[in-house]
Amino acid sequence: MKILLIAGGWSHERKISLSGARDIEKTLLSRGHSVTFFDLLTGFDQLLHAATEHEFAMINLHGAPGEDGLVQAMLDTANCPYQGTGPATSLLALHKAAAKQIFRYTGLPTPDWEFLPRPPDACWNPRLPYPLFAKSNTGGSSLLMGRARNRAELDARLAEIFSAGDEVLLEPELRGVEVTCGVLEENALPPLLIEPTAGDFFDYASKYAAGGARETCPAPLPEVTTAEVRRLALAAHRALGLTGYSRADFILTDNGTPTLLEVNTLPGMTATSLVPQEAAALGLDFGRMLEKLIKLGMRRKKA
Image 1 (cartoon, helix red, strand yellow):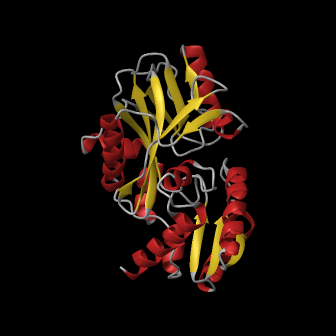
Image 2 (image 1 turned 45 degrees about the horizontal axis):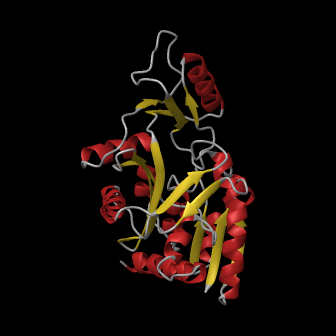
């Protein structure tokens, strides 16, 4: 199959996107596909033309554009199938404050939050108690995310995120361990336990530094907890109206209760990324998983 591999872009996560795309390219080539590596940063004005010359697009973008549905909308215009969900549902999942409204509306457990689309007035005080986590509302990979124990630390976090041109989402700190759970074709995968070694929460360094975290899949959890995490991951996938695949991130509080943080529609895609590890636990290696995503994308186009 002639595949357009779309990567790079211009978000803060550009380097991560390019690095992961090389793994995808190598794997697809080894399986007999023809692959065109397309850097969205330099090729955006040629995207529609390139899409019409390929049978399928594999999107490996993180942040916007890509996870916001823009590229998906353009591919739909060019009648080019791609993996994962469509434009509108991509945007709903990327916008953390919007997604959390949907989670709360559909009865899914998610932490309280405060959304700051612009820098607040000088008289503003957060509604939530310290310590707080401040994160980019539409960013990923834990870039710009950090803990604030007091107003001075919070102001510094806010200034960093706003200066990057992002909106801010505030959440209270939840003590517990982080678990992630992928969904592939309406089936929840085995959850994966994340234990940071470079700090006490899963920040950017923990995700991408060598030895930054221990990742165990399947997660060594009680059977009832595993079942609940998988149920919630699938429920979140459906609540957002997603298709193909996704990855839900949770905090397991000290009493073992899972709380949904967010859902990613274009999760990291290398052989050692989280969702591929979960698929491998079921005997689906990286190459076969990519083939599955292509099959699901083609099916979605026909539907």
